[in-house]
Image 1: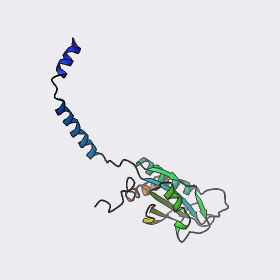
Image 2: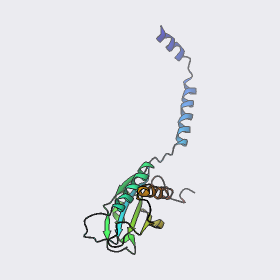
Image 3: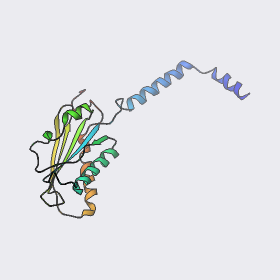
Image 4: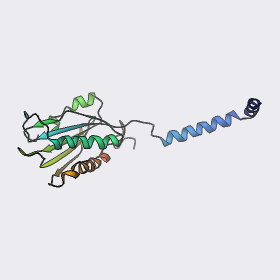
Length: 184
C-alpha cells in the first residue's frame, strides 16, 4: 500500500520543474568549484654548497630543509617530488646549471623549488640558505631569497624551517596553466 501511494504521488511531480532545479543546482556547484581541478606539481631540489662532493654523509640540516618544505607543501595540497640531495664544493653562479630543467618539463613539473644551504668546511650547519622558485614551463624565476643562519635553539630549527617554507606557498599558483595574466 505504501508503494502504491508513492507511485501515485510521483505521478503528480512536474519533471520539467525538477530537471530545471537539478540543472540550476549543477550550475551553481560548477561555478562554486574550480573546474580546473588539479594541484600544481612542485619538485624540490636541495643543493649543498661548500661541502666535499666525495663525503658520503649528507648534512643533517639539508635533510631537515628538504623534509620541512615537502611536509608544508604536501599539507597545503600540492603534488610534490624531490631529487636526491646534490653536493657541490662551491656555490654555483647559476643554479639552473646544476638542475635539469628539461627533465622537469618532460615530467610535467609546474614549479621547481631549490634550497641551497651554503656550508663552511667542517661546519655542520649552513652559514646561509638561498631559495629559488622557477616556473618550469616558462623557465622563469618567480622568486629568490636568502637568509643568514643565526645560531639559536636547535630544538626550534625544524619549526622555523617549516615557517619559512610556508612563506613560499603564495608564490606557487594552483593548477597547470593558471599563469599570472592569463584570462585577464
